[in-house]
Image 1 (cartoon, protein in one colour):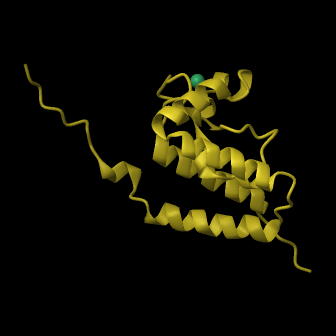
Image 2 (cartoon, rainbow, N blue to C red):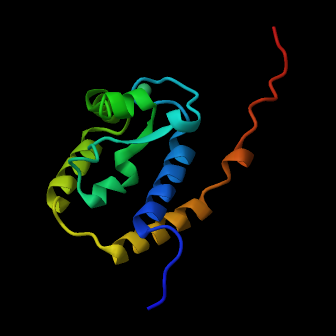
Length: 145
Ligand SMILES: [Zn+2]
């Protein structure tokens, strides 16, 4: 047996979830719209909250959005606001899919091979995504009016 150094597969996968969520949805709280979120106030929140969701949903990008500390921790994810915005932006089928898949996968065991495979999938997504810092430069706004 060789000793494995470094982070556990679950921690690696969660880091990828956070990075992808930030790249896709930015630094405004999904549920109270406060922003820009920075540092330890920039959380990655679960719609179906982590205490009741399956392992699959815990690492599913569709179930994740940026949130502030207050919404994620104090309001336990603020799911009524979360659901309302998901319904408005993504539609009923999207929300139903998350709930259905959570019911179907709850209690199932997702072991290390699953975590590693999922991390590989997300790493590929990250590499395919354009670098956020280069994709746009809206700061050059000529003075007008
Ligand atoms: Zn918030």
